[in-house]
Figure 1 (cartoon, one colour):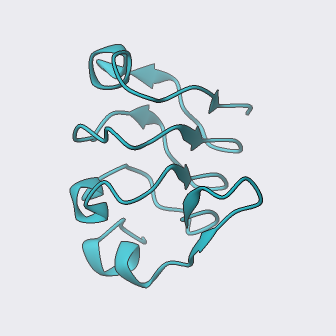
Figure 2 (cartoon, one colour):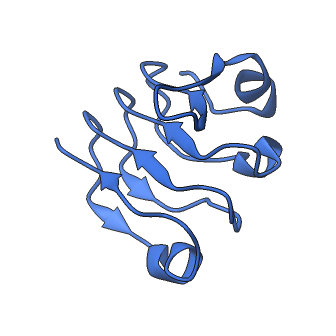
Figure 3 (cartoon, helix red, strand yellow):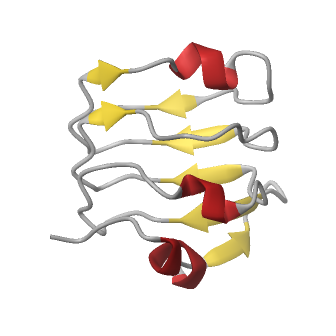
Length: 98
């Protein structure tokens, strides 16, 4: 089973997207949990976590720069303290279609 490690985050595609935001592409790895997000060093405006096996939305440090979190095609059914982590910062769209 694949885990979301600091090494995977470091080696994942990173780019400037069409709206000039820094994006981290972690889609399609099939990891079951969000972990080690502190290793992003809050460098990204958008993080794409689509197409994984995520069931629980937790494991986030404070990411003040984050504006978009893409969670489509996951199995999210539990949200833990998401408002605490993101409500006072820049996060706008959270895409969680299943």
